[in-house]
Image 1 (cartoon, rainbow over the protein chains, first blue to last red):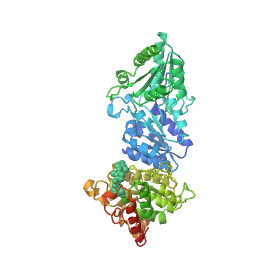
Image 2: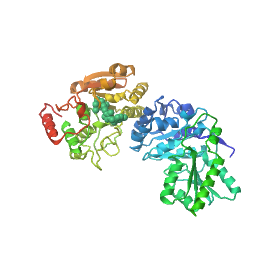
Image 3: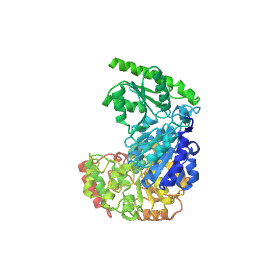
Image 4: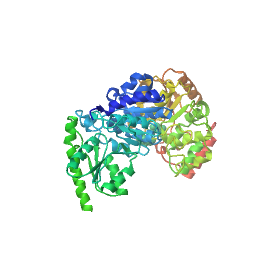
Length: 316
Length: 262
Ligand SMILES: Cc1ncc(C[n+]2csc(CCOP(=O)(O)OP(=O)(O)O)c2C)c(N)n1
Ligand SMILES: [Mg+2]
């Protein structure tokens, strides 16, 4: 638990590692290579790095053209621009023909901090998740980011990977495995299940300890693969725990909470409470301050668990 | 080719004849004479690439591909039908010979930039040809791509503009003028030529010049929207509607009667 690393830093490491093994891999950025950490790759492999300038629509379609010509492009910029400015380019020109373009965007969520709302993508998971052929992954820490990158370069279609700016505790081990479509049960429990992604996974583990003191046993699932969703794991949590709390650094509309709710209502209806940003914009502030302010905290999770357990009580 | 365009659109009951007819001579020259492609090996790595940025001219692209034996001309009658490989706008996953999925205007030149970058990286001998509409130039992304092509010195990239002067809501000069067009491209660092887009000799010469240029090259091809069918020529109305069966027969008769008709 003592080691901290931002997922974008891990991405920078992973790119350099993969660049050595995959000669057909190229990296594209839009004037943010320092922040997204693609600069490390650019330094090592200048012939395979393209800075397209502040022009994100052209960035996405240039990646499509490279993919159509046998390359595996990794495309990076801030999450707000990758998924917002260039959404239709991604939909029509990358996802529709299922091209192997890997969109790895940093600075997602509130933890962007002081830059404020214009730079805090809180809708990106939803925007990418609704596109057919697109996979969506939110790693929780540095080691998992590296494993995600190793896995998706072998994945034929397009993938969106959501990274953060802030340093986060490394919960995973470097030799953990990541598989698209597979979640990870980090702690057992059968009264309630937390299904979380990104930085909220660590908070869910802490919330579990608080509940434990109250005699409640909570399961914690890391759902880095939001699409495809590990439906078996979600349904098992619904069956065995009877109540679910989702947690993500994203709007509660259409992200992980939406994906889990869709699955649960169709397959095994139980109460689901969604923790996230409650249909509001972000604002400037310190990363931790903002998380507290918007209720993305251990207390927020414990409260949501209380609500879910109440509803579960009514159901039985 | 023009006959295939008219017939397939009439059979589909919808589609875009105007911009398909204005580009017909350009596309005929490319597929008949310029592009090195292999219908029996559609993903041959050294093939030339053609991107139809103005994807609504799909019926024209399909006609060209059928005439180059990528599929049977009889398949053209399935245009826009449920389950057809010939989608309303080009889909590279379903149609053999289609290099990129297009239809959303403004994106094709960027795809061409990516392809040309790949060609440059691999020292490929092949070229990339992108056909754009003139109204399409109003999309800001076209100019992002133009900047990138010049920056990366993509001499293997040729853009051809179908300058028919019309878009959906009227003449482009009235809706939102892109003029002065030649100066704009020059200022963006491109090698610029202007030709009559219905004159094979001029087009052919311009493409040769473009191929030997050390810059990305743009050919501004002056055309007539609806070219070859008198009641469609220069008419905005015929941008996106299908002819009736009667109009179709009239059009086919006109086209077949023309000298050197395509
Ligand atoms: C991004 C986008 N906006 C709008 C349209 C709808 N649309 C289809 S064709 C067209 C006009 C195109 O005019 P031009 O580029 O001049 O084509 P041409 O005259 O050659 O048919 C429009 C607005 C579209 N396909 N894509
Ligand atoms: Mg036009």
